[in-house]
Image 1 (cartoon, rainbow, N blue to C red):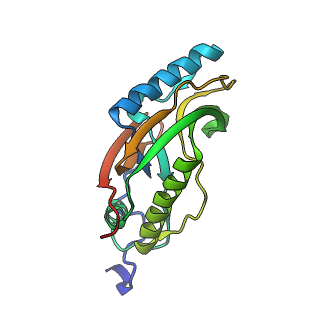
Image 2: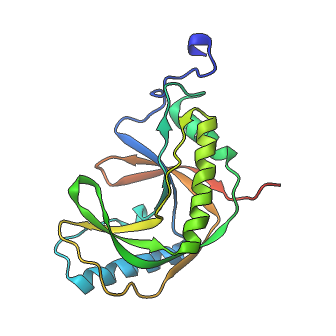
Amino acid sequence: MAGGDLFGWSGDEGVEPGCAYFFALMPAAHALEKISERRADAVRAVQVGRPSQVEDQRLHLSLCTPKTLKRLRAPFEESLKRAGDDVVASAFGLRLDGFEKFSGGFGQACLVLRSDAATSAHVQVLKDAIGEALFKHGFGWDKAALAPHVTLYYANELEVPDSSGEPVDWQVDEFVLIRSHVGKHQHDVIGRWVLRAAA
């Protein structure tokens, strides 16, 4: 290892230039269709002028973003994948049941579908399991509480529709690692793990 110590990598090796990384949940096919319908309903309900919609292939629920330390045990992407391999968590049912306005990037507001309370608890358990695995592989420990949601679109002036329609449900049985090409509207799934309880 470089330097002959426990952590042999500075953290920059294996990082794809111009990219950001995060762990996430991707909607199952039937849930993706319903989320797309809720997005279209919201645009019609409030007559948003030129919203910047999140394309169907990029709809996701973020779990956590790795926080790097000075040194890792392997190159960056490999360290993330090794952490994913170590995560032990059970599958669970997820429900998105209401619109909410969040503060997005670049000063824009975004409309999201928020999870219900039961879902939030399950998602937090998974996020904490990923955070613990990341820490073991040389990343910082992110102990923040999540507000699980799927972002639908961004807009300079945003109103929240009165009704979000029927809840969106799906059975979460896996999580993924995404490499996001910043500013290019492109997400690459570079890791995928089945949720499983401890033996």
